[in-house]
Amino acid sequence: MIIHKLKVYPSKVKLSKKKQLAWKLAELASDNAKLNKDSVEMVINRIIDNASVAIASLNRKAVITSREMAIKHPRKNGATIFGINSNQRFDCEWAAWSNGTAVRELDFHDTFLAADYSHPGDNIPALIAVAQQKKISGLNLIKGIITAYEVQVNLVKGICLHKHKVDHIAHLGPSVAAGLGTLLGLKTETIYQAIQQALHTTISTRQSRKGEISSWKAFAPAHAGKLGIEAVDRAMRGEGAPSPIYEGEDSVVARILDGKKAVYKIPLPKKKEEKKAILETYTKEYSAEYQAQALIDLAKKLNRRIKNLNDVKKIDIHTSHHTHNVIGTGANDPQKMDPNASRETLDHSIMYIFAVALEDANWHHVKSYSKSRARRKSTLKIWRSIKTHEDKKWTNRYHDPNPKNKAFGAKVIVTLKNNKKIIEEQGVADAHPYGSRPFKRSNYINKFLTLTKGVITKKESDRFLKDVQNLKKLKSNQLNKLNIVINKKDIKKNNKLGIF
Image 1 (cartoon, helix red, strand yellow):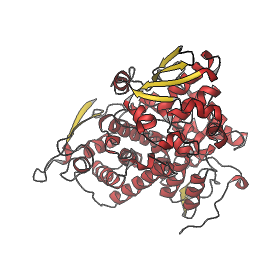
Image 2 (cartoon, helix red, strand yellow):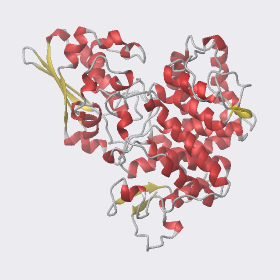
Image 3 (spheres, one colour):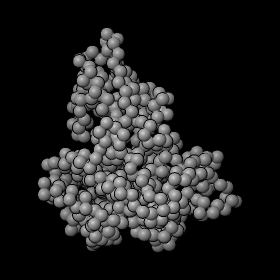
Image 4 (cartoon, helix red, strand yellow):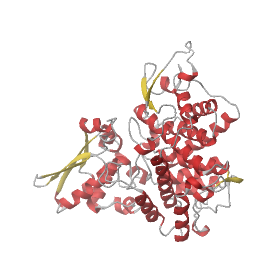
C-alpha cells in the first residue's frame, strides 16, 4: 500500500492531474491488477447478502415507491428489478435506484467503519444494473465490485465526513464511478472525470440520519448510485468535471470538510497490487446499526446472567465517541427515547436496541421494531435506565488502524436494585471476521434462506444460489440470473401517483 497525502492548493498553483486524488483513484480502477481469490469469493457472499435483505424488504413503503418510479422507465435489453419478471427490463440507472433502495431499506447488509461510516454493499446494485444493460460478463462484474470496495474502504479510512455532518454517500458516488470504470474497461482519463462529477453531485448533510429519520435513509445510497451511473455516462461522452474536486481552492475539502489547511492521508494499493479491501468489511447478523451488533450479542449474554430483569436499576454503556454521540445518549436526540419513533430512528438508538435484546435474548428484523414491542412497559423501564458514556479506550480501539485491534463494542455495567453490579464487555460482534463465529458462505446462505422464506419459491431460491455461486462463469448475456422473481400477485403497489 501507499499513502496519498491530500491537501488544498490555491488556484494559482496548477496542480498536476497525476497528483490529484481523483486521478489516483482512476488509476486504481484502470490498472487491471490480478484478482485476489478471497476477494472474488467475498463478492459472491455480498451479492447473496444484498439479495437477502432486498427480497425481505420488497413490500416496505420506500421500496414500493422506488420500484414504481423505476418501472415507469422500461428499456429493451436494460436491467432487471428485484421481484419483477426478468424478461422485463428497465433503464439501468432506475433499476439501480429501485434495487439500491431495497438493499438499504432494512439496514441489514455489510458495513465498514473507520474515520467515517460506510455500507460498501451499496455499490453493488448500480454495478449489476449497468453490467446487465451493457452485457458485461460475470468476471468483469466481479472486477468492478472489487474496485468499488477498494475505493470506498480507503476513502473511509482517510477522510472523515460525519465530523462536518456530511452524509457518507459522498464516498459512495466516487466508488460507484470507479467500479463502473473497471467494469466497462474505461480509460483512466474518463474514470477520473466521472469520479469528480460523482463526488460533486453526491454531497448532502447528515440530517437524513438525525431527528425523525425518514425513508430517505434508504433512498440516499440508491440516489448516489444512480448519480454515479449518470456521471460515468457523461464522462464517456467526453464531458469534464470540476477539477481538482478534492484539492481545489473552493473544493469539497476546502469549503465543506477540514478546510484549506487540511491534510488527509488515504491508503491506496500500489499499481498492479491485488485489491483486498473487501476482506476488511463485515456484514450484519442483526438488522440494526453496525455499532449495535456487538452490543446485541452482549445483551443476549447478560440475559443469561441476570435472573430477574425487574431487579435492574440502571445500565451504563461505556463505548466509543462514535457510538455515544451517534446512536447513544450523547446524540442528545429525544427521538431515540421515543416509543412512537420510526423504525429508522429506533434502528439508530442503542438504548432501545439494547433494552429489547436484553429482554428477548434475540433480535428479529421485523418483530423487534414493531410498535407494540417498542411500547411494552417493561421495555420502556429498561430503555429509560440506559445511559451511554464515551470511553477513550473504546474510541482508540474504534480508530485503531490494525484490523485485528479495531473494535466497535463496549463495556456494560448493569446495576441492580441491591447495588450489585454485573459487568460484561465485548470488542466485536460474534459474526465479525475476528469474532467468535465469523460469517462464512454457509452463514450468508442461511441468512438468505431465513429472510426469503415464504417470499420466494424453493425452486427460485435454489436457482439463484446456484447461479450466483457460479458468477465467475456467467457470460455477458446471463447476468439477469442475479435477479430474483416473486409471484406478481405478491408485489404490493402504492395507489398514490407521482410525475412518472
